[in-house]
Length: 363
Image 1 (spheres, rainbow, N blue to C red):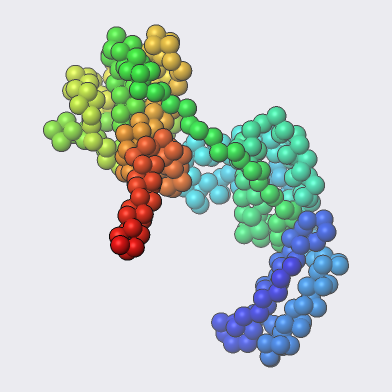
Image 2: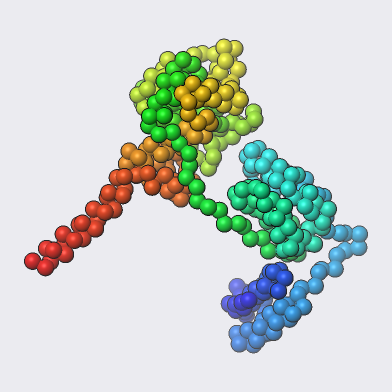
């Protein structure tokens, strides 16, 4: 519980009251105090805090004929309005729709939004006990965003429950070691499409959608550089993840592979003989076949992890890896930095430098 009293913009005092009731419900009130002095405003706020703790906040009396929608009734409005307002990618809209349809509807789809309790949230977690913590948190986040959006749109007065995310263990990203990656490259040489795909993932760090959407106009073979300008998901072309362009220098063999694959059939780098752009399935199958021949773990995204991991193992700075991979947050890049012997050696050398300075001072 807390009470904050601060100067109000238009004069006087504003009180900010936050109460956590025994059932876990969080109540927050923020309003201009009617009292003239700070001390009297604080006394009123503390009395109001005690009242809210004991009795809660009464539900607002709604206009006749107006009722709070159920989660099932509100979902289409949320998906359309929220997605449009925030310009979500089609993949983001789809993931929210799946979370709502598969997990939220069965649990409390027919409950009114303001009747969803903290206990309901706990039951949802129990129902998803077989799912990974990350999946559970994704669903909980969708529920939280839905309820907060309902508050912003004046559908409900406040979020009716407390939603706590699960703790997620830090996992190490799977990647191909140097020897396995070279085996994969050799296995892919028999298939021009697979060879280019694997090099784009393993030596430029492109995601699957970015590989599919790469166009010749974004490849500069003279400068040996490519620009990651767009991504594709189920036929929808959008900006890459994070919304920023990024430039990646080409390795020698990636530049040679792209030069050898040049064609005029399509603006896209990857396409079939008729110029039809490669689909996600085509990309995945090409990598899977090469991985089977090389006897390594299949997967397109593993190539991106391999790119970041190999850079770290070769001693590349975290900031450089972040820029090349297009990570929004440096914490994502830090997942790979335990592989960096250069960073570890440099850290220990700092201790030696300190010892040398201390020895010099003693002399």
